[in-house]
Image (cartoon, rainbow over all chains, first blue to last red; front, side):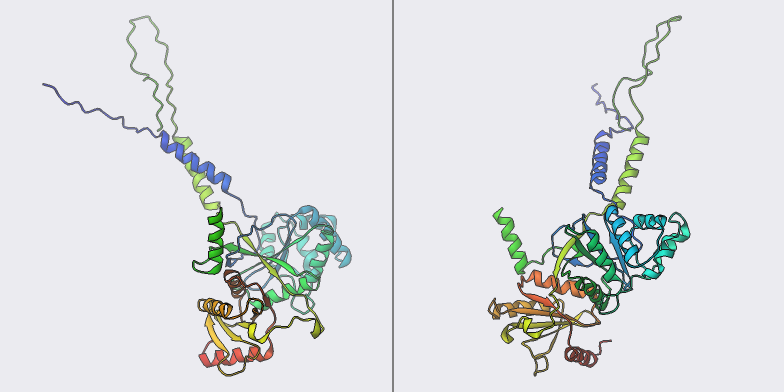
Length: 221
Length: 181
């Protein structure tokens, strides 16, 4: 009698395709990922339909957090060196070379000039320093002349003289408008009128004229 | 795990006594640790990755001019002023006089777009100027949102300027009448 033989499956399935896909995903994420630099403040940026990419080079960024504290950061360590040198001279900060080195390694700074020396004299490796860094009071800029931020902008412009400096403003959703206006003032006093606001991308709402224009552009291609 | 088939190691013939059997090494490698590590890395990268790269929005501010004759004049028919108030509420008026009867109106960020489009359609393109005046109570998000509306509705001429005391007073009165704190 012919008996139907049920082929016995091995208890372990062939997982090769599964593993292949897993590693494909892994390599995708490894290539696509970009690590955020650690910042002392948390900023949630608003959305905008703007599609221009954020420039990464020659960027002077002013960040404003929820509470209206103003921080400054410069992307290129070489220019950070020039900037802190300039500030040290023009504002008589009396920084030592070691303290200037701490500035070059710091991601962003937000203290009045009076406290800058004591902030930079701290050892960045210590845990207590990290707390101090998080509790910086922000750069004062609350007057019509732009406050101390004016000098930061001025010396940054000197440091970047001859090159195009991108002025980035990164601000939190809940920041009050007057703080933003003060920051703009500090730039305006330096004759800077062109800014880039850091935003998160968003699609143009359907039915609007921007949406139509973008659709037409896509169709032409 | 992933099985690469390469002969079992237990199915050899007996060669009789005295014949030493060369131990066959299995070609099958246990891939479990590798796969474990792979998935660990996947989860790590999924959590740390930021897909949406930040974008940059252009903002051009007018230069401060002291002399009134250097300033650009706005035609009354083409002026449309948007004031940003508390609680994501916007106020707008057409022309140059906010205090005239029924001119000063309230809107939200959802309805302001229709008003901008209406104004754009009813005005000669060269005359239309939208003036944005954020009050002290507006947030940064409001400011960016309204600038975004300019891009969305493709308004060519707009400017962001300071609010005047008269207008701020009007905003305050409207707010207290509507019970907005």
